Length: 122
Length: 107
Image 1 (cartoon, rainbow over the protein chains, first blue to last red):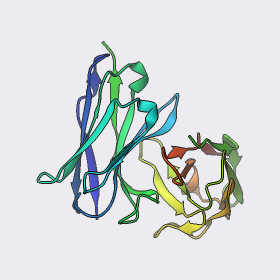
Image 2 (cartoon, each protein chain N blue to C red; image 1 turned 90 degrees about the vertical axis):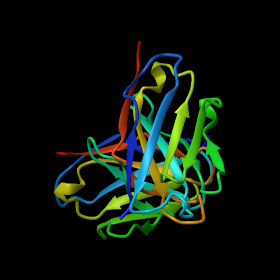
Image 3 (cartoon, rainbow over the protein chains, first blue to last red; image 1 turned 60 degrees about the vertical axis):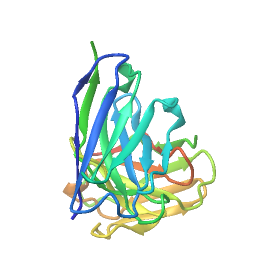
């Protein structure tokens, strides 16, 4: 049974960098699934941030204007999100997730972390 | 981006009711649609994918239909555990996008 757990600072200053890690247990991030970041805020609902494949291939939401980066740490079986130049609009619950189907990004997400609230404020 | 529009935003129903939620895509997404259920303080849980495929372990009272731009999630007989918020998601193109949610509340 795969489990995902987000971790990182709950408070980030405006113009700073948001850094989160998703630790994976019960499975390997080297498995041929896509690993995803999604966020949820009251004002914008669920927003897809981006994803990474074990080969290092990534896709991102253009709305983030190249502020987002996702990387994988295979030895530690975790993947990470960095979001630069944050503003109050980036305040949200951040979730990591896994694609349901292996070998394709064409599918929903079956395993999710519990989510972590990140507030952008001085 | 493909816009996903759900209706209604809120649905009041009773246990045993048949309820349906609609999701409209701003362009043709074939059958590349998923439905999620979310309860307060929890992550979304996938119910359906490919518009009508039931995820393993999801009760058969849930069903999905549609293709192209119009999709429906139906709960044949609403159970107490089903009061939650439901979201559609398209995975036809990038960026993946979600509907704004439909809250199913007790009448």
